[in-house]
Length: 459
Image (cartoon, rainbow, N blue to C red; front, side):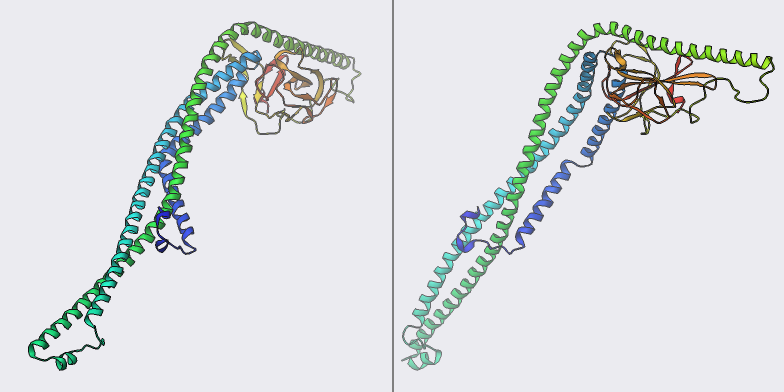
């Protein structure tokens, strides 16, 4: 460990070292992340996202199909659908999370193993440097002793002095041999000292490098431990969610069975409500037809009497078409049909039901406009109006020999009143979720001569 190094061996890093360590660690962590979430994992995540998008679209269609269903029953059915959508996705996410956890733990263990090896190298080098310094001190002492022995006296021993001081050939040879031996020992000791110093310098360089690496590995190890903990928690959360989803699934299915039995009566009420609206509109169409017949008879009588001339005012009292050559959508956004016109099957009971209008995607509070100019003939509050909620009906009179009425349901609030003459595009109310519906949307109907038609054919 760094704290075990002696002061003489402590590394003093230059200012840029910390930046280098941080960059190295960041690259290591990034590489590790790419390994964990490589192409295969990325493809799996894309598939999960596609599945979630598909589920969201199917849920929107399902919510529209439940229009007119008892609110509690619809909510239970949608909750069960949400659970069924989410459960396989959560299970797939758990597989991915477990793979990421295993990879994170392998990376963590690898980093910690490398850290332990580096710390062992550090300890060995510190011990070797200490032993080397002791050996250097010992060698320096030995070299001093050699010098003192060789140069005992005035310290000026030389080959000439040996020759002059020798009393005989044997004496010369002996003194010269002693001097030569001392010099060789001194030179060898000096060489050993230089080698020991060089070895210790090399050890210190290696120790500095190992200590830098230890610092880097400690940062990387902390990041790896944190990543593994996040992956472990993610997997644990998914396990808990899956258990909860399965429990919810069982409870919701049981509750649904209880509520389904009550829906048959509700469907009969809905059909009666729709029939009431049809009766009102048919009566209006009959009145308009009778008025047209009366006007045509009057015009024929006038022409037969010869008093009609070529003039003026003609055309009788037939209702003029509203401004504009066609109907316009009741909202200004691009149209997205969530439930189309025509017969559909209730997803809960399997019973057939006629959807008299078209459901369009619309956010709560979005302005709804009159599809054509006309006279407002009904503004009904949600209370007592069954599945239709807040409702507006507009009589557009006779256009090209046909009687036309439009109906707007589920509004959050009104911006018109009975008897008001409205122009095409004029705001008459705002999108809501009143009545037996599961969310905000536009329900729009067009009636021609007392019968419904598909509105999408007239925009």
